Image (cartoon, rainbow, N blue to C red):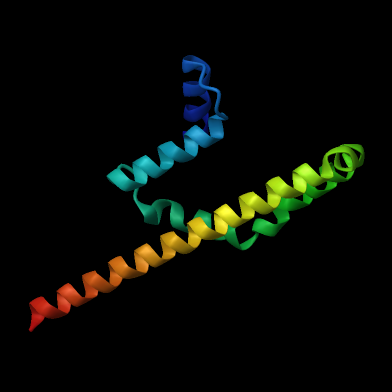
Length: 115
């Protein structure tokens, strides 16, 4: 339903972004504001996360038909893939460190107030 809402918003506002991206942003906003509770989506998300590798099979099969594109633009594509992987790894690492520090500060504050 949120995905369709995202697609509807893209079609109405003519935003040059895929509707599912807008849908994911809406889900994030709904989760942060409490409109949707995490426990409502946690079980389904855990199931999809456990079987995530199966979603890459159709993509991999589709890529096999694009050999000529890889031959002509392979170096550029490789550069883009490596760069995006580095950005993703750095972003994930920084986010994890920030959340760990925030949790540590919160834990220390609770300990301080309980003494």
